[in-house]
Image (cartoon, rainbow, N blue to C red; front, side, top):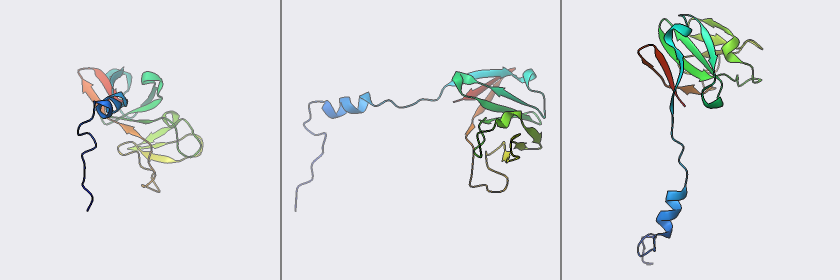
Length: 126
């Protein structure tokens, strides 16, 4: 039976250096609005770090999801909000703002981002 070796054992640090050189994306918490900028039952499009997001206020709870509809790339944040569902204005696809799930096919989802409220500031982790 062949002897198993630790690939890093006895190395000159090349393996460790290679791992150190791999860029691991880190999320950033970015202020996107004040609470007063998005009244209850409304949506605003915000662009933290150049990424368009739909920022939604449902009964005082804030949600952020990708502003690009998966159907044809429509601007979800310009659509109508009905409860927790946001309708894309181009072709009527409906998205649950809490989960990003499509109303008729929950396995299809737009990206959602964590939202934090600190005082009057609304932050999104992207």
